[in-house]
Image (cartoon, rainbow, N blue to C red; front, side, top):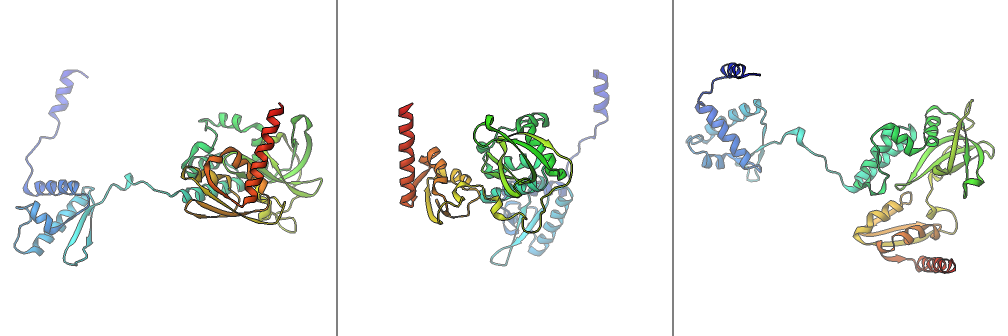
Length: 340
């Protein structure tokens, strides 16, 4: 654009003009609401805007203020009023831009939202639900794998086997999996009907499936599934009846494996270790009293992984039996390292 065109555009601009008294009053009123975001009463406005609201009849000024508020509202500046405790005056408050509002969630609310997302992901597998749950869970991404931007990267990270399982869950298709328990070279084939994906904490994933040969439900560790083949035909598993899914099927926490009678456990956590402890206990019902977590365990040895990894996260551990089990396990590990 050359200089002449610029001059031409300038000639077409709206000519500035002086504000009339009403416009000046509205602008001054708006600036005062910006200055006092907590709000203003008519009495305070009569003091700081002397000359604008100084009618001997206070009701007349109140009507004028109401008209001015309507004018500002038409311009996009909405002002609400609230009665004062004394009942004699109102406080007028400039409302914030509704588009600029932010939602605030507690940690427990984030955990519940994430759990609902994961349930939806298990019922109808969608990668978007999984990543959304990872992003908001407890507001801490430390416990999740690094997210990739593209779906191709996500598929590579998640593994072809996992995405085949998602496809089978979505289409209700039986599968043949290559699976191992301890060593990959000892893998074996298993035909199963996928039921749902179960997630424990931020890293462990399990496939709940119906073993077609043994005619029972089993939980398979997802990373130990080496390959997946989609099969033809209908599912043998029925979602209703004697073999329907139960809450026990979703129990994947080692601390709840039926090894002994239920025993009461109490962990007093340090502030920085509380979230880690709660994440580890995902799947176990516990009560939370400040920094103390109370729950029952039917396999105290199943709690050892947390004590091994984050012993500094806890101040006290009860019962004494758990302390003894932990001390004995550390001693055994130390002896094994000494032999290496």
